[in-house]
View 1 (cartoon, one colour):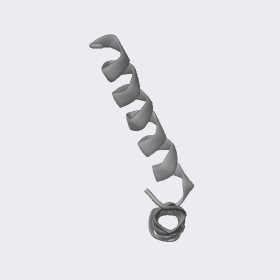
View 2 (tube, rainbow, N blue to C red):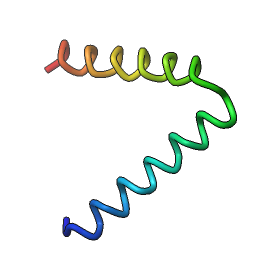
View 3 (cartoon, one colour):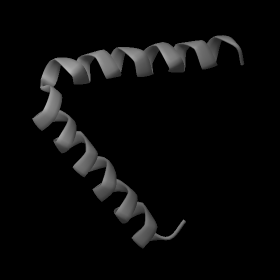
View 4 (cartoon, rainbow, N blue to C red):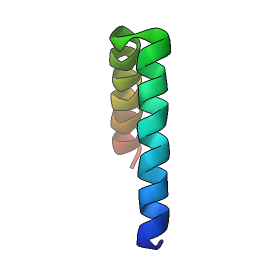
Length: 47
């Protein structure tokens, strides 16, 4: 991917995280981080 696409993707993710913080607060981000960690651990286990 080109640099412009990476920057657009990073901007989109940043905007989604900011919206997440505004709507749900910081505790929901901790919940999502735990779920992401569980998913990564599951993928690593089944590799």
